[in-house]
Length: 140
Image (cartoon, rainbow, N blue to C red; front, side, top):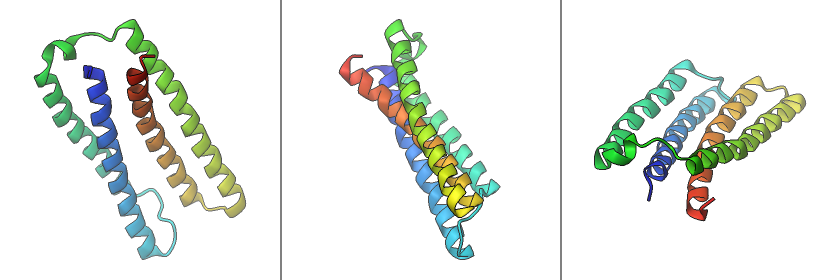
């Protein structure tokens, strides 16, 4: 498994874990409010800090395990693969945002629109790493 594939796996785990934590906190806040909670800055900061700290620790561990691979620049195939994965994940982001806007046009719930857009951002980034792994495995 290449270094970049390992980092993609790690980022999927980190982003999924942080996303689950964030939406668990939003679910708790929403239950207490008896409505969809707005974007709460403390939860957002916690989400970002969780990703940053976990990424630093886990990426450092991977880089120490294989320093020669960590220092190597991405080759042409890897750059193409990353571009293609980013393109495909953009469709997930677009779908989620459009779904949120359509839901808002019917129900006028701005808090849910914000949460759906944020969830779309999360899912598209997770999907980008997933597509990278898939492309690595397929040899694209």
